[in-house]
Image (tube, rainbow, N blue to C red; front, side, top):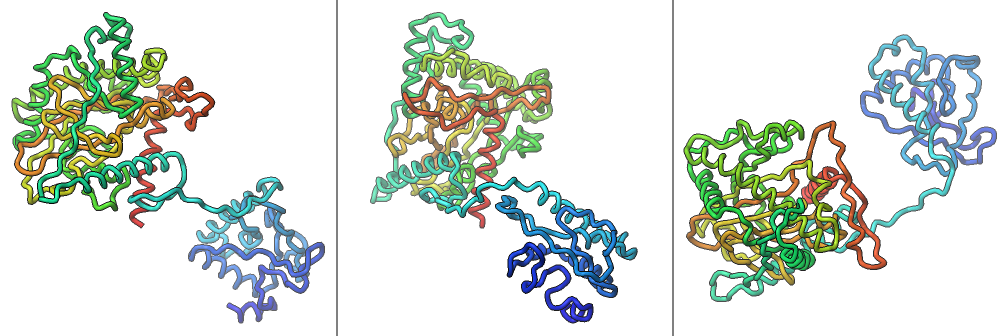
Length: 541
C-alpha cells in the first residue's frame, strides 16, 4: 500500500522503480525500468510479505540482471542502490521482463520456508536466465499483419498454413456442389436425384499380383495402369472388376455385416473410443464427418447416421510386432452369424489387403515409377476395416429428407493412401465438376479412391476424392457397406524406425517445386487431427 511505502521513505514510486528525474549514471533522462510482471495471487501475497518485513529496516538493494542476490557490503547500508542496466538492445525475447532476485533471496527467516517464496524464487531465476541468454542483438522483428485466406461457409480461419488452405479448398468445393444440388431440386416436392456417374473400370484379369511382380499379362498391366492413372489425376475414383475374389465371399461379407448390426442378440464387447481403443463398435451418432471436415456450423447434420464396427489386423504376431491391440476379445459374439462373421472377415481382409497393394502398384506404374513406390514406405503398417450399416428410418425422422445438401455420412475426403469400398445398395455420391454424381453398384466390383496422403505423396498429381453417402428418402431396408483403409494402423513399436514419406519429384510439373516436405505418415495423420481439433475449438468460441 502507498502509505507503507511513504512510511518507509520510499516515496510513491515503490521500492522497485527508479526516479524518472534521476535515472542514474549512464542512463538517458526519462528512462524507467520496465514494470514487474504481474504474479499469481499466491505469489503476490509472498511479495507483499517481503515488502512489509524489509520496509521496517531499510530499502533493499536492487540487484542487477543475472544477480544471485547474495549478501554483500552495502546490502542494508542505506546507500542509493546501483542503477539497473537498461534492457539489451533489440532483444527478441519480448515476453521476458527484467527482474531482481534480491527479493527472492531475502535473508528473512520467516519467509525462508514459505512455499510461496519458493515458487517466486524459481520463477524469477528462470526469468533471469532467459534474459541472460536472450537472442543476440539483431534486426528487431517488426509488426506483422495477419492476412487471412478467403472464408467459406465453415468457421473463420485460424491460420494460413497449407493444411488449412487444403481443407478450405475442399469445403469450397462442397459448398458449390451442395448449392448446385439445392438449385436443381424439383419444385413439386419430388425427391432430388443426383446425376449418374460412370466411373472408370479397371479390368484386373492377368494383373493380380502386380505388386510383387507376379502379374501374368504385361499388356494387361500397362492397360490397367493407364486407366488408373487417368482416373487418379481426374476424379480420384475408379472401380476394380474381375478381381479374382470369390463372389460368394463378397455376398457373405455384406450379408453378415447387415446381420450383426441388425440383430439385438449380437454383443460387441469393445467400444470404439480412440485413443484408448481404435477398434470395436462405433454406435450410430458417434461419428461426425462434419466435425472432421470443419463443417459443424453449416446447418448440416452434426453426426452421421451410421453404425460401424472397426476391425484391425487379426494376426496376433503382427499385432505384437506393431505394438497394437489384436482383435482377441473384440469380435462380436452371441449368435451364429457373429461367429461366422469372424471367419469370413479374416479371409476377406487378406483378399482386400492384397488387392490394395496391387492398386497402389498400378498408381506407381501409371507415373513411370517403381511399382513399390507407394507400398514399401508403409508396408509395416496395417489396414483398418470399417463394417458399416445405415439403418432404415422413416421420412419424418430423416434429417436429410428434402435437403440435397445433407447426407447420412457427411461429405469428406479420406486421410490415408487409398480406400477400397463395397456395398449392397446405392448411396455413394462423388463430386465431379462441382456437382454430386452417383456411380452404380457393380456386382463383384471394388471402388477405389485416393486419399489425402496419396495426394501429398504425389505432389498433388493424384486427386483426393470428395464423397459422401446419401440414402434414398422413404422406406428402405438400410445399406451395408465395407470400407478398407490402407495403412490406417501405424506401427507403434519403439523399435520400428518409421521411414519418411517423400513427395515424388517425378510427378511435379516442369519447373514446379514441391509444397510438401518429407514426413512420417504418423506425423501427417496427427497434424490433420490437430488441425481439425484446432478449427473445431475456434468454431466453439
